[in-house]
Length: 447
Image (cartoon, rainbow, N blue to C red; front, side):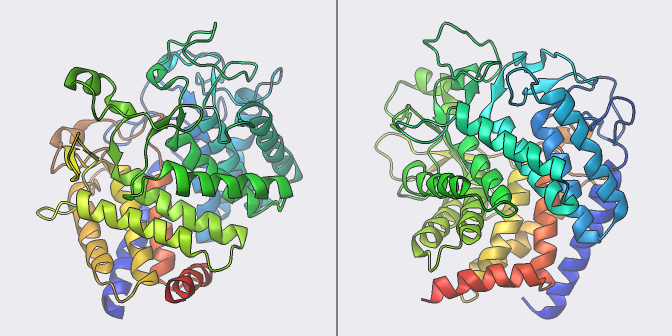
């Protein structure tokens, strides 16, 4: 890619980040009445009447705004990032038992959306740490650091499995883990996952602990972060280069590959290949290893590269561009079959970041930069709403009905595409931190 093309894409991404994404969301979603951030937006970026709030989305807004404040050196983003702190500490943090509730209503009180009620999830608590760590890096507030450390210790006290390692995902109001055989029963929308350990909470805990370790060099945190990196790299990731999704407590993978079709389809969400999670995790592992200061970590780089290459080989659409959402290894087949050919916004966003990163680490392997450029063209054509702002949930190439569907929800904010665009702009503009990170991994690749 020539310098001219690099500058052109960086400029396009800067305009997209600033004018099409961040300025459309903020300050629109700042809730000056109840606190925190509003959630649900229409297709033309207007507030909807129903406004529940989820810890994941609230924390992601804090993270994005904290990063944007530094990225643009903008005091307005600084204030909007700070704005979310009181709401999640006063309304989401449980003053009786500790830990963050998964969901609250607009005012921050009990809410039964998704049937979570008073239940807690390690996944949601991880994102609280992720957002608060970024906020502390921005503000250097003692109160923010204290809350972040308290959040880390709560997860370690309640969710960590000292016998088999890793973390339990499903927690009651008092922080007790539960499974399908427990006296406590859940009726939540994610109930099918109850009792399993999983890749998704694991990779986002890795992400959160990396962010926390960047601001708090605690020895126990270092040990737990290193343990998560090893677990994800060596156990959760299949030797072929994709994440296995769910596991029994002892890390036996959950698979329905040899089950009857009816059983396999009933348990679909527990067992498939999610290409977006694979290459997102490749990036998160490199970040974790680098933050830990591991020298010449060839094993992590090799595994990360295998994950990206597996996604390219099996999940890239060589006709239209973009990555398909999901695949599957059926019984007695060595080839991954596409079982969901849609192209969700977050998967395409994460692809931009990792393809550009790997093009920098492996400059002699042209596939990465070629696919990065094709991915950006695909995103511009099918994902970005150039009229109303933000990105559609799904690619209009595959699911044109998303043109009129909501832009904001408890699962969709500004985190995936905001992070990707900021990271890509930094890499394309030879930002100092990006250069340092890339040079570190180039040195590992060449050793």
